[in-house]
Amino acid sequence: MGAEHCGLLYHSNVRWLSRERVLKRVANLRSEVGAFLKEQKHELLKRFSDNEWIAKLLFLADFFNHLNQLNTSMQGSNKMFLDLSKDIVAFKAKMELWVHRMEHGKIAAFPTLNAFAEDEEFNFHNIRPIFLEHLSSFFPSWIDISLRTTIAEYRTFNWVRCPFEVSALQVHPETDCIAEQLVELQSRQLWRNKFKNVSLTQFWAEVQTREPNLSDLCWQATKTLLPFPTTYLCEAGFSALTMIKTKYRNQLQPEDDIRCALTNIGPDFDKLVVQVQGQGSH
Image 1 (cartoon, helix red, strand yellow):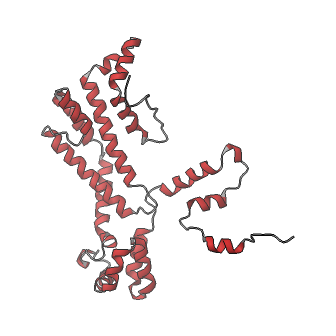
Image 2 (cartoon, helix red, strand yellow):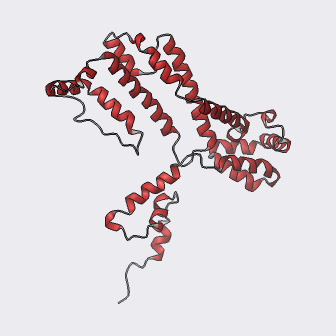
Image 3 (cartoon, one colour):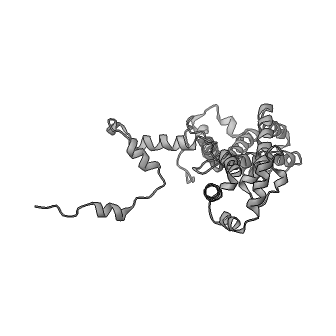
């Protein structure tokens, strides 16, 4: 039928990120799907001729797209608690902004729904309370409490991410020794320059190695950076295992192969070449 896609997508419960793709594909092919259902005289045809139902579909597609972006931003081998706290707090603030704008009739944050409302001259005010209720109730009360706790912890340990921008007065008052050591660290131009050129973990590792007098400060920073805030590393290991140990290699002992697949250390080819004898003796 000349459509951009040649088929619909199936949703997998294991990969919840596929929900946005499934919804978006149905939304893009809604005319073609409607024509097919009309040809088959299917009862679902009335859904694809109902502008309110289509608007709900487009709203969910846009909303799950925002969720996918949040989830993707929280994945990675170097993601830390402070980074995830920042992403979650920012998403919560954006949702509050979306609610405020939608109450005033602005839906630019949902581009697919916005385009549909403009092209079809569809008045979404009748179903706007449904969208507002969905956005307002997305974070239950227990999550709001958890978020407030996360924001408090994020502000308490913000000096770990920005040691040269945060005042020592913002450090928890029960850790006076850490505040004093932070002032001492901020007074050294060497570490200011180093902080701009290396990763956060590498920076604190070098400070801990070369500045024993700042041990309390470095220990607190290490405790903040050390926890694994997501299951990304575990999922990466399982993904590598499924690629390595297939049904055709079910007797394989995959420990060494997984170690090679997951390591960030590159092989020393020069050393490997020296250890290999190019021509055997006769």
